[in-house]
Length: 421
Image 1 (cartoon, rainbow, N blue to C red):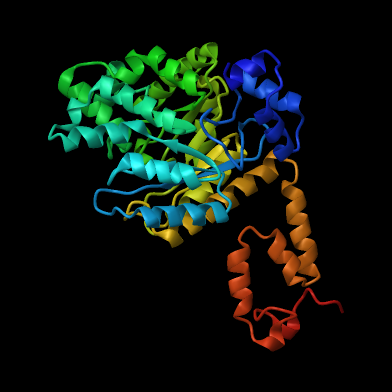
Image 2: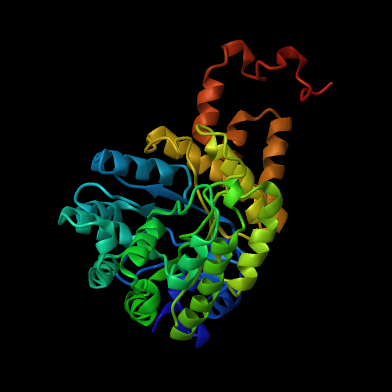
């Protein structure tokens, strides 16, 4: 029995108990959400986790960090260091997006030490194997792809991104769309190339029941990928994006009927005035499945600062109903992120998530701000460190003060407005 099936049958489940305690909500609330599909708890039956979180309606907004090698930069130790930094910064989940080196070994090492949920994009490994054999990307084989999905699930991956909404019909819609940046999703672009070159259907769409069977066996959560997400503001909210989303909604219903947990991924680059409409539409077409958004980034002109552009969009999106935010680092659009980029990306996304939780009325969110303000007024620096979102940076900045400024900061000094008269 899967977690969703247990919830539908009102069976006691330790995962639901754990999440209810973490969220300070009743077990019945979590159980009803899992049963209806508005809450997911990504957890492979083959993994033991120290931290278990749920994603969905009525819960704290969660944050994911992407890690992984590239063919040009393969350093497992560095990726494990990034993982450690992301966890210390408070991330709720990570995704291994590696495309360089021994992918099975990299994933094994990450799964062995990671205390939070781990996701992957199996088509990356499938394409890497195809290229290694001297073949072209469009020659990707459906059997190989499903073998890799099963291998990754057996290893213990908790959720996988699968671009099931890209099919022959939605690809035709893409051809008619005058996009500036085309298909920016790596996984999505692989499938578009295959469909256009061979005329064959996307195996993830055509054999969706087979995918559900694997997911059910290991109780992994399907993250239905947005292969046609907009890669710039000009392409936002267009035909291919909405057509794919409509397909994903139907696949959500199929998964729920099979007892498989699903969430829907979202864009991408969206102008600020279109964020709320995108969230509303995704919730409606996706039958209120949990939404997992990359950002969204609200301007295209800030490379080096895209952790900020995504935090702006992420805060608004989450306030309007997005449940899961994928971080964006300062290295986005420029290079593979380093350790410092990972830290900054996680913190920026967590700030966005917390700002949204205040609006959502999530238990404890506003109270934390009130505590911070109380201790700021009292100029109690240790207590401020306890309640701030980045205690490490707080401590480093305070350490720069001269001894005579221990009671205040150097902005106002003796003229500090927080001092009592």
